[in-house]
Image (cartoon, rainbow, N blue to C red; front, side):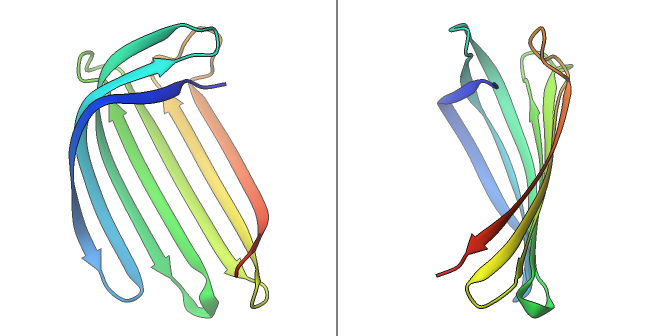
Length: 130
């Protein structure tokens, strides 16, 4: 189980890069202090940054795609960072039921002992729209 992250103090900005009726793309940049609490009751405070690029597209037939790439550097140790990549899709099957698929990748340059550096996951599900 990963850490529970509790923001202590943070500051950031968001810029819309592209915005039209079928898509949007945005960029977030920020910095702050974060306390990570682990299942073994240990914790650590890190000075972290964030650079996040996200995008959403509406495709024909009601299909939608969302992508997000997030870089989380440790500002006190330049060589340590985390990188998260997510791609999610939604396709309507009927007026009220949709198929949902997601692919996620989590990478950490300096994970805790016993934790993998890279973690891939694939999710699928049925959604009810009302």
